[in-house]
Structures are given as structure tokens and as C-alpha cells.
Length: 104
Image 1 (tube, one colour):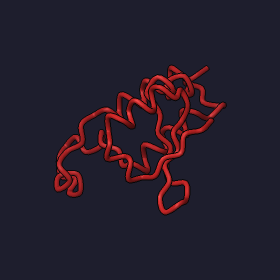
Image 2: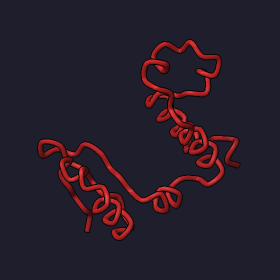
Image 3: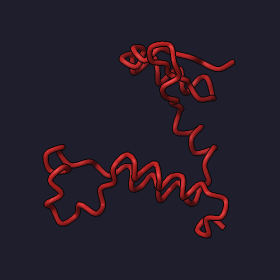
Image 4: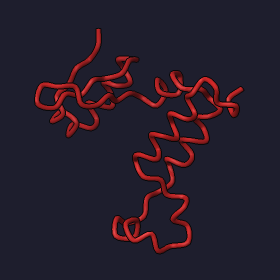
């Protein structure tokens, strides 16, 4: 049975982590009574996405973000390595596409 939790429960990080790991399925988060997000354990996530492509994606996503002032200015030489949330989503979609030659 799917787990549905209101967004204010995210404050209880330990409880939410245990819920994600114990349920072995995505946990649906609601905001004002409507679906807003889905969270899951990393183990479940890795079982759902292609292995080869997800490793490269996660490696980029795990890079520590610079302070928001620096990230907005994009003055540093390594700003090309930082991806916005939208860019990360697009990269994940590209990696999950069935015709992605990197995954074959």
C-alpha cells in the first residue's frame, strides 16, 4: 500500500528515512492535499534507474554546491561543473531514455 505523507512530516528526518527504507516503495508527499513530491531510499532509486547512466548522474549530483552567492554569480572557473536543478532533471531524463547509446 502506498505511503502518503503531508509535507510538514519532512521535518522528522529520522522518521522519514526509516519510512523510506522500510516501505521499499516511493513515499508520496502531499502539499495542501495535493501530490507534490516523491521520496525513496537510494537503494530503491538505484534499482529503478539504469546502472551505468545513473552512476555518472549521481556523481555529478553529489558534487557539493557552492554558496548561493557564488553560484548565482558564475564567476568561478569551475561553474560549468555545477548544474541547476532543471539541468539535473534533464540529465536524468536523458540517461533514462531507451535510445541512450551510453547505456547499451
